[in-house]
Length: 289
Image 1 (cartoon, rainbow, N blue to C red):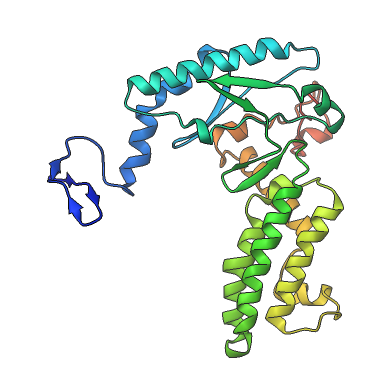
Image 2 (image 1 turned 60 degrees about the vertical axis):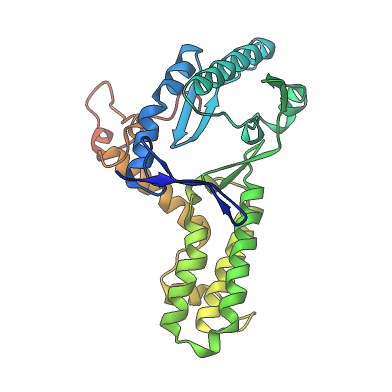
C-alpha cells in the first residue's frame, strides 16, 4: 500500500519506515478487521462461562448473580477470565487498558449493601465497583434508575438551546426547527427506550428540555400552554416518545426486521387450543416476570 510512518519530537523527525501491517486510521476496513482479529476474546469469555458484548474494541463481560450465588466464586472466575484475555492480547500485539477497565454491579437498592465489598484483582490492580459507567453514550448507574443519564442529556441540551437562543432573532422558524432537531431532540431520542418505566421525576426533567426547545422555535412565552405548541410541531411528549421507540423495536422484532438478538427476546403467544386471541399478535411475558 506504500504507506510509511515517522516519529516527530518537537522539530526532530525520524526517518520514514515502511508499514507492512494495519490499515489507515478511519478506514472502513479497520473495524471489521479488528473484530475478526479479536474474535478469540469472545471464545475466552465463553470458555469461562461468561456472557459478553462487543462493539469494535469495547468489550463488556458480564455474569448474572443469583441471590443465593457465591460472589467469591464469581470473583475468581472473572479474575481468571480477565487474566486470560490479557495474556492473549499480550501475545498478539494488543494491550488491555487497565485504566479504562471498570467494574459495576447492578442490583436493587437494598441489595447493594451486601455487595459493597466486591473486588477484582487484575494484573496487580484492584478494581472496585464504580457507581456509574458510560456505554455507547448512555450512563448506567448501579440501580439503573437512569438519573445520571437524564442529567447528562439535560445539561447537553440546554447548552445547545442557549446557543441557538443567541441567534434566534436572526433565523427563520424552519431554520430554528432544523437546528433544534439536529442538536436537541436527537439527544432526547437517543437510547430513550431505556428510559421507559423510569420514575416521573426523570421524565419531567427531560420534558422540561423539550418544552423549552418548543418555545424557542415558536417564540412562545414561558407560561404559555405547551400542549398546543407540541401539537403544532407534531412532537410527542417525552413519555410517549420512549414508549413509541420501544414499541417500534417490538414491531420490527415480530416482523423479522430487527437483529437476531432482539428477535430472540420476543416469544409470540400461541394458545394450546383455538382461541380468538391467537391472531391478536400477543406476546408471552419474559420468564422472570
